[in-house]
Image (cartoon, each protein chain N blue to C red):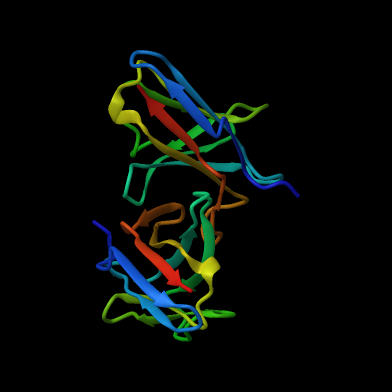
Length: 113
Length: 114
């Protein structure tokens, strides 16, 4: 069965610094999709970044980038130039098949002024 | 272009009552998914529906829970005879197709059972 593990329950970072959130997953599939979602206190789930497993190039979205290591089944999120608005829960997710998300338990990130 | 809408945002029910949660997908989206988030946990898949069809309900508890997505109107997640353990945030998501498309989430309904 697919699993997603986020081993850092909480993290903090100073404003303008860089932080990396870890995620590992387990699957026997070769083609799949990985996602990072942000959940601020409003609880709205916001897509941060997506990675297709068949692509070797790491995805980037402005200040957000991933380090995708397929062989190691690792998918970490790097946030550069952290801002106060980045304070949120961050969930790593694996898409099983064509529609079923498997979410990790989340990392609570706090950006300090 | 309105996003996924859910109502109510907050719902309080006493044990034994029924809870009805509504989800209107984004315009043009015909695939709806329901997820449940227990406190301090990630979202867990419950059910996947298309118009008038339940495609996958493997994450739904066997009793008291049901879901529908009628030809007209919103998708409904219904919980009968609620218990305290049903207290959670329930999220609906929609997508235009399955496969490569990410799902767009609604703001969630927080159900509290007293």
